[in-house]
Length: 456
Image (tube, rainbow, N blue to C red; front, side, top):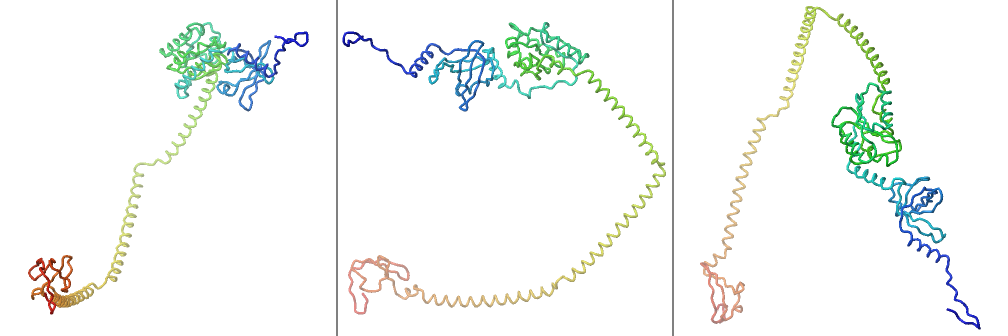
């Protein structure tokens, strides 16, 4: 659309964007066009901020890109990346608007080259650990003197030659039984487990070596199967795992009774050095010889000393008879002396007791006299009380209202129970109660006529 100013048309100008708006638009475009994806590379310039966020550069031989993994995601990572680590990240391509730099927002991280295999390894390890298959209490000690060593490995494995060479050098007397099995490839895990089960069932050896040389995680994956771990845990003899190099760890290492860093080290753990044991035995034999000679010398000296103390039985019996007689005299003297002292002490105590005894007869007479006096006083007091009681009874009898009633008098009460003492308390048709000597009666007044002497 155009406008006319004078004689020439002028074109409409496009809108002007700010840098912020431009960066935000590019960020939205990147996020729409690049969904979450797995990206591999090498860690560089790794920094863990105080906030817990991870900042690093992901690079390869030809390019690099800045990356950030926020704390909410980083806390679920099962390892802390280091400089030079090969990793794979699951990230979203985005743009950091303040600086106009595109970066990766990392959602998950795992070690490169491991991928799903490493995740499966961790899951199986966690499950078997929770089940208790790797508990230290299940580990069995190795025999001190092994006579037969079993080996589970491949006939073509270089590790087999290393193990046999080490056993021949350290303990040539050991018998070796080989349980051949493939150690990698399709179905090798089940065959390894079957070889371990066969060795366990036959019980021909004192310790079993499960070994293989080094390799990638894919090469060693046969030893990361649950069937192999359970076969090792269920084996009837101690099992030493020598799989890979020192930095390689497999599920078989955790299930075994002892983990060796290499197959050669496993052979060294299973065999004691013959020369060392021979030197030890020779030293022990010398110690035993010296101890026996010393014991014989001490026994000879003891025998000589006992022979000097030995006397004839008759002389010994006479000596013991004299000792018995002396002890009898001492016993008799010891018995008589305490008995005499005790008798004397008893006599002394009896004399003192008699001196302290009171005159019971005099006390008894005094008590009888006091009893008679008490009885006389009680009888007199009882007589006085009875006379006083009779006097009070006579007075009470004189005051008894019943005696008054018997002389012809009566007690008059109104309906409220009050005693009538005056003619003014009487009313016609009033109900009165009379109490007489032989009973009582209720009467009703027909009329009331006061008299001069106060009677009605």
